[in-house]
Image (tube, rainbow, N blue to C red; front, side, top):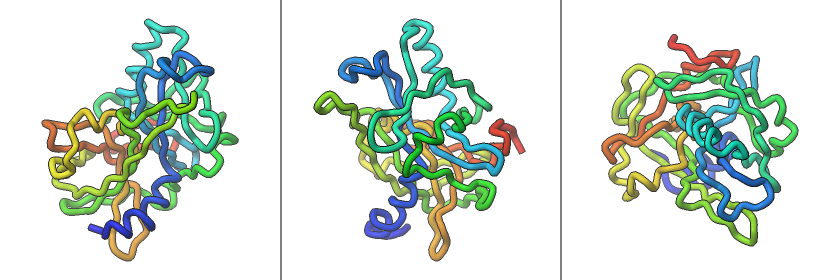
Length: 233
């Protein structure tokens, strides 16, 4: 596992540009009392499509909420300044088993600013092994605040070790992180990167769920196709 200094000053700045918070709101003008939930997203470039990737259950929850609240909107925090409205999003791919959904980011490229798209076509996700160090940044909902009328998200960097790999599903043990299971709410969809000595960070998957309050699950990124669809390979 890299040292705390390496994680904070070397790895976190690299990972930060590929991720951000996604949230649902009843109003674009007033944040206080109108934001109902949030998750996280990753940005990837397949060589054919520039994609936003988040969890299927995040997208599914938005659709269910919007049936009751037609005014509900999905927004992305892409850079400094106002959030970007993800207007009438339609997924390119969605899979409840993998718990992932993908969206074409072409309409919002101008709003991405300092955000970057991980070059999945140039550095495809490799094999993950037990004991590998995985790093990711999440945006827990319990750190979401409205300050001076502006919505702000706290971000939390995580460094964990892989404890099991089963096909497209990866698990890491989180019991030692001293966090309650509900404190992970909001990190769903954040991209996770393997960190190996002397090698660049490598995207391997996306955080999906907490199991038995002890394990955090990821879906391996090899399920993403160049056109943004999701299939088993």
